[in-house]
Image (cartoon, rainbow, N blue to C red; front, side, top):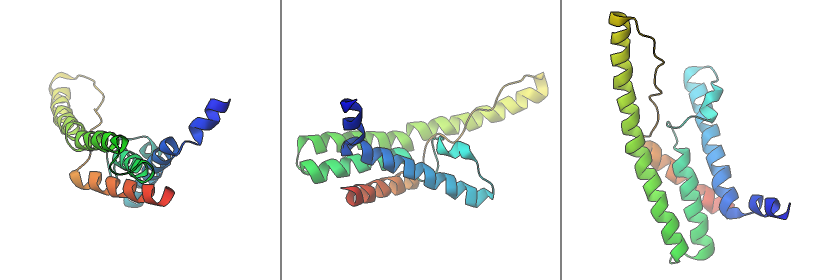
Length: 147
């Protein structure tokens, strides 16, 4: 039981977790405001504004920097992996979403010609660079506030 308490009182775990949840919650309300109806799937979707992954990893990097030093090995490691996560969100996952969009169009055309039945692929997987930047700024702010 002690390990459970230690995990959920560990600021290096809790701060990124809370930051990611806040980013997903913001995303939910943003899309509710835009579409005029709630879609609870946005609490779990990847992609969109802001990047919860970017917010979480930058909150972790920020909290590590403040507590272990911005010149520490641990800060360097967390920052490096944060940059990889953000690059992946705006690069690879975004490209996969764009490919899903093209595949969905192809499948729609095939459905008409060949009467096939396939589910649509989810197209919003990654982020624009701006969504990653906003997530990163949110994470830095959260790390500063929650330190």
